[in-house]
Each structure stands twice: as C-alpha cells, then as structure tokens.
Length: 450
Image (cartoon, rainbow, N blue to C red; front, side):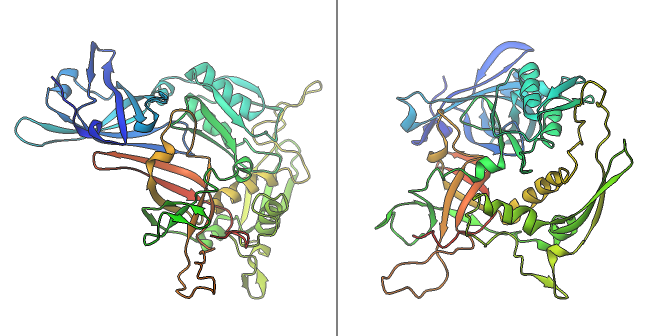
C-alpha cells in the first residue's frame, strides 16, 4: 500500500489527484505519493501549459503501462490554505515525452516526464481548412470552441471587424496563433493568447488592457531587500528570494530589426500602388502610449531613449532599414460586399498598426527581469493571478547615502509595474516557489516611493 511521501508531504500544498491513464488499457495508475517534484510552466505566448514531473517507479509503472507518449495525466493541486474553500486546480496533461529514466538503486527507478496540456494534443491531430468572416478575435473564439471545446475570454476590442480569410491547412492552435498575429487594437497594440493555471478557459487579451491594469500587489510590492524586515512604516511587502537581470538592452538589435527608425513599403497587388512610410518609434509608439496614459503621461523614461544620436541625427529619424511587404490584395472586394483579406488595412497609415505591434512587442522584451518569489500568491483555483497580470517590483538603489529621514531610495531603472510574461511554478518537498519572467515598457516615474 502506498504511503504519503514525496511532495505530498509538503506543508504548503497537496496533490489531491495525479492519475495516469491510457486509451490502450482500462487501468489507471495513481502516482500521487510517488511524485518527488514537478514544475508547471505558463507562457503568455502559448495557449497551453507544459509541465515536468519526476516520480519514483517502485511498481513497474513504465513497464506495465507501456508508456509511449500518448497517456493522459490528470493533476489536481491545492494550496493548504485553500483546502477548506476547495479551490483545487485540476488540469489534464498529455505525457508527450519520457525525458529520462535512471536507477535510484537496484529496484527503484526515477522517471522524468514532460507533459503538455491535453487540448494541445487534441489540436495536433485535427486540421482546419475553412473560411471565417468577422473580427480576428471572434475567429479564434470559434476555432477554440469548435475544435477544442474550450471557451475563450476576450479582453480587448479588435481594430478590425470585417476580415475574411481561409485557414490554409493548420491545426487549430496553429491557426489561432496565425490569426492572433493580425489581432490588433485600433492603436495597433497586439493581443496575446494564452492558457492560465488558475482558470479553465483560454484568454485573448490586448497589451493596452494589460498596461492599464492596476498592479495586483499595489499595496504589497515585491522588494529585493534581504537584510530588511518584512514590514515597513509605509506598509508590508513580499521578499524577492532571488532575481537575475541579464541579456537586456539590446538596442542595436532593435535598430537592425527595423523597429526604431525605418522605411516601410506596402504593395497593393490590386492597384499596383505602393504605400511608403517612415516609422519613428518615439512618435509612433512611446509618445502615443504616454499621451493615452498607458505608461504615465509625464513619464519620459521609456525603454527607448530618444536623445541618442549618430552624426547629430536622432536614431529614430534614420531609415536604418527598408522593408517591403505585400499588403492589400482586394481578394474579397465585390460590387456588393467588401471584406478585408488577411493583410488588408485602410489606406492613410492603416498599415502602420502592423509596425507598431511589432515594435511594441520588441521593446516589451528589451528589459526583462526574472524574479523568484513565494508561490502562494499565484496558486489558487478561483482565477488567474499570473500571466497577463501586472505586479509591482521594487529594488533599492546602490547609493549607501540616505536622506535626513533615513529612508531608502528606490532604483528607478529596475523598479516599476511589470507584466508577467512567463511563470514557472516549482513544487518541491523542501519548498514551493514561483519564478516569474516580467517585462515593462517604461521605468517608473517620480511618483513611486517606498
């Protein structure tokens, strides 16, 4: 008989279900008490979760189930504080790879599995080859419901409502991500399509909505201050256990991508007339975001410094790259109806929205930071508290001199309100924490204080 062991013995959370099943056999194997550790990954770029699971095979599980990479793993977890509320998180995964198997001793094996959320497996075996009409977001919603039986929460308003397209032989998730690339707001801000740990539905959310959110921890920011107490005169905060800030600020890469200053040519294959425009990231992106109060109307500390010059000419005034694209085709224009094809946009600068989307996504990833914090704040079954949400992070500056009030100053470069882009939940026997990859468009203004 199995006894409580592994991560099930943790005081912070419980595994209430961990069952491996297969269509090839009626047997279902309970591995709750065999799991030694596992990780669950969320990504704002993917509409599915992934996981790594390690368990001790003491009962010939791999042999008897004949694991071949198509088995279902049903995983249910609950934080110890949520047991009475029954806020259990239950997810179905497909075991898509046996990552490693090695002997712990003569009779026991350690098995490491990789898994992907089950609807991604269902997507892989289906093919979409049909026509859709309407807004890109409603197309994605229809595909998810029809092929994956998943609801999609749409948080944002499309800038296009009259598109027509034919999905060219893609599986449902592949098709949705393709369409998502043309799902933009009226200002050209991109949408992100993702699966979150705490909810069953998928989420399609635009960046503008994310930037306008209040931080979920506005009154209890995450602070990297190992030597300080857990409370301060201005309120409480949560400690950042560790962080890394590397591989950032690659401005020259942005210039070479054509998202700082560049000339774009969009060719209309119906009329043969090209539309040429200069893209200026300062005017077309950051000043517009500031004026719409998405990064603080008085905040000039963007991820791009407009003062940089080469030969007395600002970087964004150069046409550092010339990029040509096929744009409009007029494929669905008839005497009675007019629908936009996949790349169609209105004349007079409508194509600029595509460049804005590309530039915003590029600069959002320019200054990422990884922080490891306690996992409790993100593991509950009543909502999404991770990817697509905004959190407040505070770092102290490196100047040892304090003012007369003996108060610490913040590092305004690294501190700020960040969007959570990736989350890795680490479930181990000795501790449970979450590593977040976070990104922001601008540094904090003068209004942020400790």
